Image 1 (cartoon, rainbow, N blue to C red):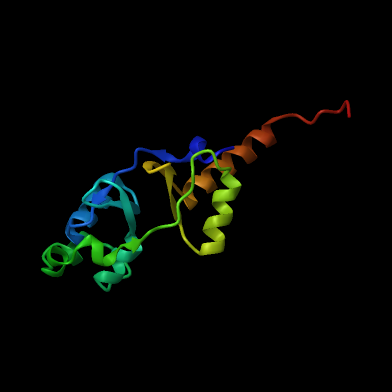
Image 2: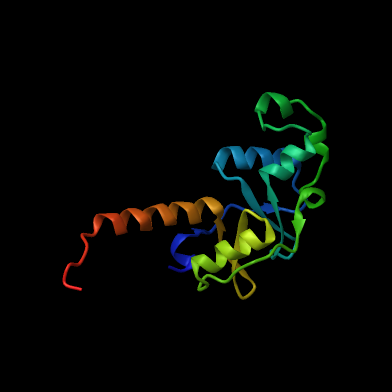
Length: 147
């Protein structure tokens, strides 16, 4: 199983000069927890997570009521909160390679790059869902008693 088989293709991205409010609203709207950050030239320059946002607003939870009227969320820019130059993976890498990279680097997602182009994102959740699906398929296949 390759990364391309289980990644989210064409992920939602955010511009480096967007506000923390923009990031929070985009994550809430799309239901994602990671946004690849795009620079002025349109290339991937970082990643911002919901954890980065929670840390910035000093809250263990991202509840709209907590940040809705806070001026801080309008003033802080994504570029100051993002992880720059994130570790990336090509789409033809194996899913276990992606899992190993995430575990070894203590990260929860990898932007998927084909050369200089962002083509997807793979998260721990994607890998867990693929593992569950693989396990269920294996359990549903009757054992081969001919061997």
